[in-house]
Structures are given as structure tokens and as C-alpha cells.
Length: 150
Image (cartoon, rainbow, N blue to C red; front, top):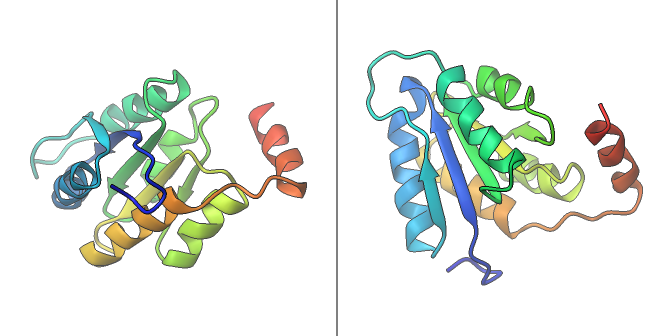
């Protein structure tokens, strides 16, 4: 299980360009004791990412999952799609620092990762850092409330 000993329900969604990392992430999360809900895609065959990202983000919005990880080639479109869902705060993460700040300052409940941008080991480290970080609250709470009211 993860450092903080919490077990989470984590939704996963990807297009074809993030499929390989999604599979590695799913295995990694299971090994840490987390539950996953895989919204696809289920192969490297070309697909339209909103069809898989939106349901994963909606699972968070509807409290069917605690968090979600969405993937694609760059992660950009996936973050945009996830952020269309009310109550979702999706951060595009490409480093340990961006993952840490996504949770500490932005209380991100979804992160986007680009398989073509970083190594698989980095992706797993990003997820671990994000899950083990805590929202700092304080001045950041006001900003999160502003986002959530949009």
C-alpha cells in the first residue's frame, strides 16, 4: 500500500497514445492496494479521447471514484476534456514538482499524463507523489472555492 496507508478508488481513462502507461499504472495501483475502474481504451487502436476521459472524470465528479488519472500522447487534450466536468480539477503533470503542487496548491482530483512526454517510471513517480501529497488549504482554499463555483 502507499506511504500514507490510504486506499483509494481511482478511475483511469486514456486514448490509444496513453494505453501502454494506463496498463502499467493500473498494475502499479493494484500493487499499492488501490482499486481502479478502467474506462478504456483497451488497445493501441486510434480512438477519440473524450469518449474515455469524460467518463473517468465524471466518476470523480459523481463520487464514484476518489481520483482519476487520464492519459494521452501529451496529456493536454485529456486535461481539457476532464476539466469540462463540474467539480473536476485536472492538472497536467510532467514532473514530481508539478504533481506535488497539483495536490498541495490546487487540490487536483484528476491528473493528466502524456505518455509521449515522460518515462513510465516518471509517470508512476508522479502518481505516487500526487497521491501521497496533501492539500495545504489556507489561501489556496479560497481559490479552489472560486474554481468550483464556475
